[in-house]
Amino acid sequence: MKIILFSLLFMFSKNIYASNICEDVPKLEKISYIPPVSMKVIGTGRLQFHASTFKECAIQGLFIIPNDSVIGYSTSLDDKWTEVMYVHPKTHKDSSGWVDSSRLKITGTIAPKR
Image 1 (cartoon, rainbow, N blue to C red):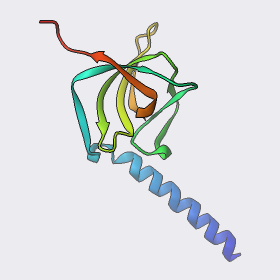
Image 2: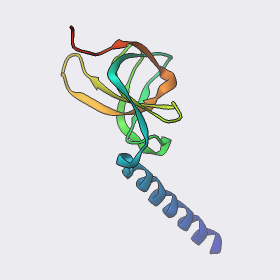
Image 3: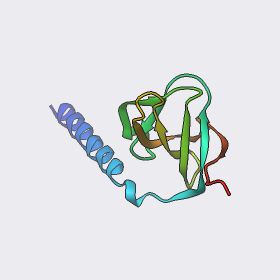
C-alpha cells in the first residue's frame, strides 16, 4: 500500500514540476539575435517544438523536418535551445517555440535592405 501511495505521489509531483517549468517562459534568460537569423533544419527526423527549454515542455504535434527554414530570434544561455518561428509555405500559418540548437544551421541574417 505504501509503495502505491509513494508512486502516485511521485507521479503527481513530477506533473506539477513539469507544468511549472513550462509556464515560466517569460523568466527564461536568453540571448537575442539582432538582427534575427535565417536557419535550416539539419539532421534526420522530426525536430520537436517546445514551450520552454525543457524536454518536458514538448508541444504535442508541432514539429519541423530536415531542410525546413525557420527564423531564429534567440538562444538559451547554454546554446542548447533556439527560439524560432516557422511559417508553413502553403498555409502561411506560423508556429513559434524552442527547438534543439544542434539541429539548426544558420544560413544568413534577416534585415532590411539598405
